[in-house]
Image 1 (cartoon, rainbow, N blue to C red):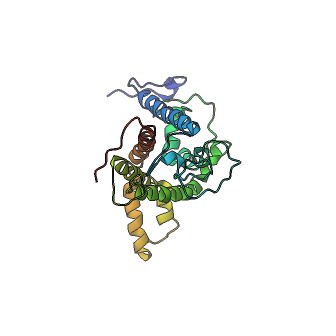
Image 2: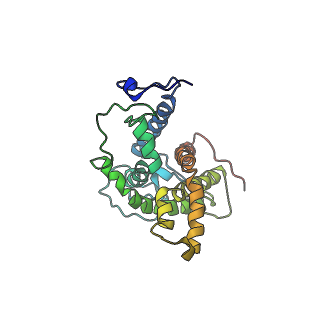
Image 3: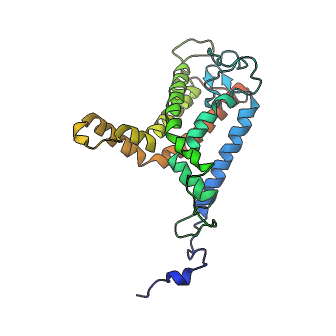
Length: 260
């Protein structure tokens, strides 16, 4: 068995890896950029976001008076707001995503190459971590987590309202109902598998034996946390898909099939 290359022999070498280590960071960049571009276009479109009884998650809750009639009964922002109502709410779920521990790893490696992959040197002269602007804002993740839970409640309420028809009568369901219900479930799964949620449930405890209920909850959340990456991507994709589906129905491009 021959010895591997010495540290001195690797000085100045970017990497000795011969596999396609760059593929995963490239896919991550493409996927995140695609979502950002789509979300930006839809946020400024200010159209086709409400197809009774379906409301796009990118516009929920619709808080401005310039919302489409019927999209919301609560208008906290007056007539002075002339922009898209989505710009009032997207900053909060976006902040939750951007500061998420998994997404930090994803965009650190992909966008900032810090580092782009294991055993691959990063191009930066030094690493300052999250001690300087703007990365220091990532420390606000725990607060965005609480706000994110409030949005999950709102979107769950939207999913319940999706069991109505376009006239407001209950006891109906269509494909859009399934889409909104799945969207709410995936967002709850993503939030409950969050590292901050795991800390809230079981953090600051010296003896789990004295807190059996919190221990069981922490065990469940820990199991979800092991698949946090999967839930992060699934929920991100489904939010965009839900918005697209509502937009297609609202614009008359497709018809929402009714089951009953």
